[in-house]
Length: 326
Image (tube, rainbow, N blue to C red; front, side, top):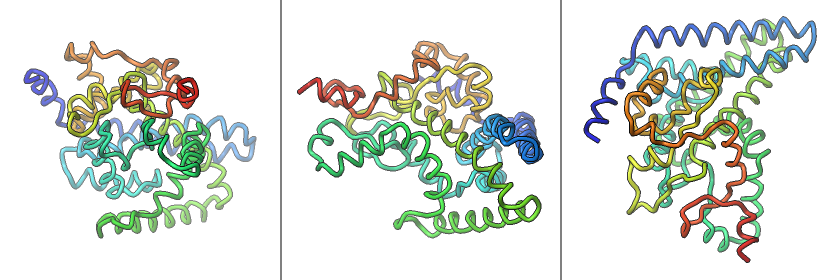
């Protein structure tokens, strides 16, 4: 493990040239594609929708940069990370500081059955499900429905949920939400004054839906997969949750590029300070990572069947599993 920490250490410092290059190859294509979508409105909205898939890919890359800034991984300067995170947050409709706080909790608690509830996908144990009342079961089935979880839910999360803060949020978190909301309104009004609100909506909305759905799917597969590690707090360890509780999602190279290497999620959870453009290199640098079984693109769809955590068998199971046990 000491050798592993030495390998990780050399990748924890960002490379300014690589970071700037990622800004160039992400933000510039994103705005060019948005402009092309605007031009396509006068030709065919089907063409606009086609372009929205490519634009959504760069939206996801902006989110990855935003995410790295939250871990103080994209630049060596905290001020630069915070500034870029704030600007990126406006473009993807997420208040940076508020989200970063919740995401830090996610890193500190993922895979811990006694500390669920912040920054994760709502998952009940079998015993919890059996003991809850009928209405909570209906709500849980509704929440875990793939359409709600991966299409309606993500869109709601980006557009609506992030406009509000929790009642127990501190002053800085509340201010983060309020200021981001203000700048989002200013940004929308500015663009709408140039191309009209209707045009803005027809361009931005499909991009948001596609990117939010793909992003949520990535997050879902990263912690809801066959063989995932979850433990009660007394047996939970940070290293185990990283290497066993966070997936190695092996995507085709083009998808790996658009998603900023986030498929190497086990490495990200092991050391969040590593910039996204180094994650694959870290994976190749140590044999311990090569022993981790990857989840392929097609294998990942098995995760759609997972609904509950079976503490006795220490595995995720489907609702059908309960019927079979009766």
